[in-house]
Length: 485
Length: 96
Image 1 (cartoon, rainbow over the protein chains, first blue to last red):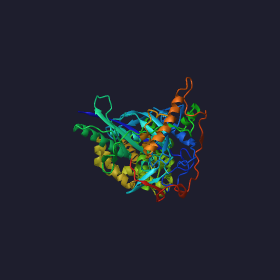
Image 2: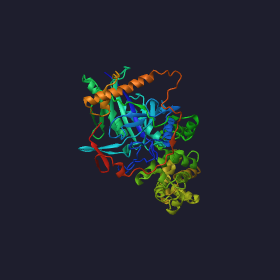
Image 3: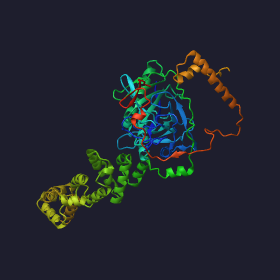
Image 4: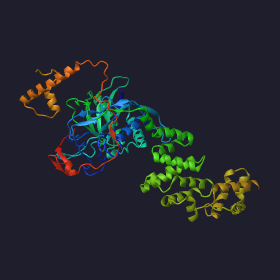
């Protein structure tokens, strides 16, 4: 029998704010344990929460970027449960009136080859709500140690419809969602720091069946690749169970990315009874048109929109756009350089950035913003090559020195003697005449119509020029002289 | 006063992580029952035309700007912890 998988993802994304979502103490990662707490975080008696405006702005921005409807009114609910990660035995969340409804994440599936754009799809979202993150448990051999630094960090829960069918789609969904959040300045989405966390609900059903199968929740998927691998593994496992005549048990499983195996986290004896009720300490939030418009004005162009524009506006090949657009700083850098370099130079600019700049940045472990080579340097280098002042090999050398020193390419070319020579057309013409005069055989062949015979003259010319002659100029000069013979 | 029919004191005690004696169960079942009876009475009020709300006051959008301030010193934060180690609260090992 052929099976189809149905996958829904619940993604938690921490919002990058200075302070926590319902209190003033600082939010952050990597601090000494329990140094980011206050009476509200710890749920001490009498402590009262107050909303952080920046967290609301951020989730509205996330909603607008993903095409959600922003609810005119939303409220806060208490999700009640006892677990040491929650110091006050409830988590402030949004139950039946989330702030964002609907929307979609645009994804691109792998193309038939690396240089071919893959199929695009829109994965619909159910909702996005805002809640407070919980503390972190460090499980030891005999007890667990609780650190409440993370508790109270603003956290978005982004819930997709069960609308994905392959591990690749889930991978593409997370890649796109993550880029959207980073583009919007909403979160850094560093999965190692827990800024983006993903749980997957997976079920399978015979192809053609409309009803959903029993779902299994996969947890602890702590990298985007592990999400893909974990889902692929779980789909295979479920098909195996059914094919052996077994039934799928509704359970939560833990995927271990290092070993590529999963294990059951004891199926829940009873469904969670969270007894949600409105939090009496927090007043509802009303989002009006003016607020939405103000946030909309801050929304950046999204990666796929940028890619479509780069393809059309700069006529870039797909491979270049797919490197440039996922990093907002890199894409901005490219556009600035392309504008400075002038019409028709965008691809050359893109090549320098995606090959040489990224290679040097990687080697030096620097970000685009930290590079001493600025867009103006790239534009100047492209112009030097294009006008024949420096040759490609020399330009590569110039780039490395430009990256190290931040000097302008023209200055480096001068200092290092990397300019193409001769600049004197007369000298070049003499070398060409000499080369033709000393190779009668090639001359005869060329005259007889063998075009490639011209190459026989180029070696001696380049030798005379010590390798610094502009090949384009050499070719032109030779042809001019040969035509006159 | 009789218990409200939907009140399951065992379930509630479990959710609240409370180990109750049979006598306590009877006491709390009766007390919680009367709370539920009171709610039942409230439920009889005619609210036709009244918009549902989470709050009695028409106050919305109460917030503060995103400015971080120092919190509690670790020692103060951990003062109520029954057990602690490495500046963290030690709890029985629990994995959910």
